[in-house]
Image (cartoon, rainbow, N blue to C red):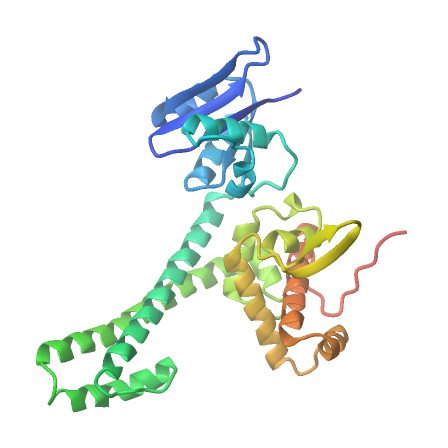
Length: 339
């Protein structure tokens, strides 16, 4: 049975729907208010619904899938190529309708539990950013009064009580009290970050997939939970290489006249997960007592950052293999292809 392609341009209140009626050939491009969207598709035969992977797309994808429709979420950059002319809701819906009919790797539709884990990661990432900004702000303000402290949070915590005591004779009390409040606020941010990490560890203990990939060297609680939640279903990728390419850990290609040149990594896909994998690979190389033979060989002929990305690529492939084939991690495992 051939499904009718439908493009939906998501919005806060008014959605735009575009499709061609397969029986009459009529081109339908109409707005729908938010409460009427599910009611409209509940009374229709199963469709192939395309949407941009934007805010709220995961919710609508799950809701429409429950009604029996097939939902395909697409990156905005993929849809943009089909929008020619002026930009409007109607034009965007038509571009989505064109894009959903093309072959391409869709964005995984995640469960509510997976989205909840990613929400914890985003909140933690924001808190870490706030903590860094606040520490740098304190350092910058105190530098204006001749107080320069060494790098690291530990150095800041050990030096700032004495700094504030010395400056209390020269500066107004209102500024000293405010600086002390900002310094004490760092402890509050530490507690919030630690609380989120405790919740992620709890989820890791309860989820078999997360526990399985946490045995991989360089994959800790953050990388394991983020990988499982971001991937969605492992079988949506055909291979570990496709998963690594989806994250952006493979070289870009530039070719002309039959000659192909490999460039740096593409950096496409989820930047947060890619960053975690690269940091994990860097940690493994820095603390490994017996590096793998292929790592030693690669280190002799390639720069250090190339070796780190290569190891991160291997970690991504290993994560996919464990989740797709439901096997535990085995050190030294050699993949054998059937003839």
